[in-house]
Length: 126
Image (cartoon, one colour):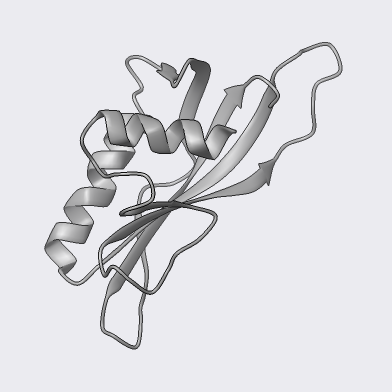
């Protein structure tokens, strides 16, 4: 699963821990500081190619604006590398490119900030 492979890449880089502060298709109310990764679809398949151009959204929520901003940009730089687009994540090969830079989305009722960006990944089918 693409979002799990991305989560395991983040975990291997020391950015978070799957199930503790990295969540797949979920953003639980606790803990305050979380990374949520959502599968958001993709683009039409090219009939002559076995790979797909898929999209995911990566969001980071936290109490501290500065720390949350820093964390989303750390993830962005890990996944959007113009000098080396090919990434291997949990055995999955993909070419990743951010669709836009991280953006402040909202503050929730607990005054936690939420940043997000969307990512394209050319990768194999699940």
